[in-house]
View (cartoon, rainbow, N blue to C red):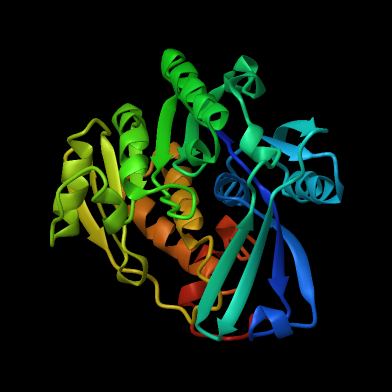
Length: 319
């Protein structure tokens, strides 16, 4: 019998136009910029889609060329879009600066953007029909009161319909203080079935631990049945349904680490929805996270399933 369980993932948030310099150096002296798009939630959705998982992205864009670029890029990645074109606000803008070959700075121009005006009425109930999981992040609630309401509405709707909730803390200190973030995001941690956090993000909610497994266990004690601590170049640690496991990172020559955490989440959720055990979820997560670091851009390096083994091949050329 074929597996008929729902697998579609729903997510919502702001996707911005993204300008990336064409060379390393101070932004003021860079002669050219490449236009793309970027946003934590849509990065996850693209990662899932490339791994064979249907995904829906809900958001707002401005009635401008940047907004049209966002929708064009996301449609090209075969996402199901539930987009409102806001004629009263511009599409947000994200600008990267590669000051050195190993450092990247990110500048945001999103105050008053269309994405920041996301509201509960932008989240249609029918978006959850046949959905298996809702994924949200701590970025969207930081954008505005209405955006925070939209996330809470989506979470409550998902819970009412028996849809799993995944939450990535994704702290952005340029948007709000850690203290304010801890206060606002704690209910989302408690409501989530799966929570993702870096060590410092986890410390918004739990006491510091030297052992990341203890950090994951403490997060899980707040409500989620699966808690995953992302450790970057050191891999990850997770406590899920009583199982405790650490997995090392996949070593790569990093070109751009922005978006690696979103790629990690996409890999984990894809294997979760495929019914795979914890070790497989984590190993795919570190692989997808590593892939994201190998090329410039937030999502361009995300792999398909057929490409997941490429980071471990010994031959440089496939013929």
